[in-house]
Amino acid sequence: MKSPVHRCRDVEHGRAQGRAGARANCQQAEQRIPISKDVITSSAASAMWFIRDACGIVCALITWLLVLYADFVVLFVMLLPSKNLTYSIVNGTLFNILAFLALASHLRAMCTDPGAVPKGNATKEYIESLQLKPGQVVYKCPKCCSIKPDRAHHCSVCKRCIRKMDHHCPWVNNCVGENNQKYFVLFTMYIALVSLHSLVMVVFHFLYCFEDDWTKCSSFSPPATVILLILLCFEGLLFLIFTSVMFGTQVHSICTDETGIEQLKKEERRWSKKTKWMNMRAVFGHPFSFLWFSPFSTPDHGKAETYQYVV
Image (cartoon, rainbow, N blue to C red; front, side, top):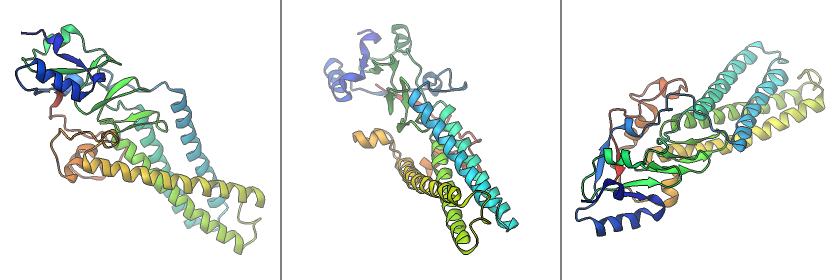
């Protein structure tokens, strides 16, 4: 019988070729081996996760600066000079709550391990410890030298294989994967709501200033006020469109249980089909509650379930 080391295949040759070769070399058909999640969970999953990518760090900083700029314009240009105290308190509180939740979601999406597979675990000793049977093979990623579970893809920026990787987002300086997809969805949702709220307030403020004296509707000079409002309007409109589209595609991806990479590559579905509600609960947690909308709540991604390597 062949050594387990000979049953480790590099994924760079393609799954189709790997499967064909396995059928040619092994008498039994290829099978799946259920393996505990603990085996494929990175030891750093509970520690702080941060990708040292210059482009991603710059994009993340820009995101925070744009939110802070919007908060500055809303508070100091539109709300504080307003004569309607109730209007200022209600809108100021609502806007800052949404902005806070957006930045908190961004931070969790950026600093949460997206589902990285342990690096360099495709060793001879480890593969032998799996005690593979004849006809069983495991796939090895040649880039990070890890045993690659099903539905995992290698990210060239993170330099790791990520479970259920959807895409790498420079705006959160991280991959969107199994463990942080909830936070990314919340980030896009709250940014869209912040953008919509700011646009509505800009429209009302313009109408108010046109009806009243421009020197009284803002603590800044009229030209500065117009420039600040136009920039905020442009920023809000741009990010409203962008994040709304991203939010829609993410929800669709969750409901269909198919990541962006799997849709792009048109990969064959090898996993069991679930209802849309079950897929939503798998990402946001069980059961449905206000915690679904909280970036401070860590969802249970089905810890009792087992994960499978393609073998």
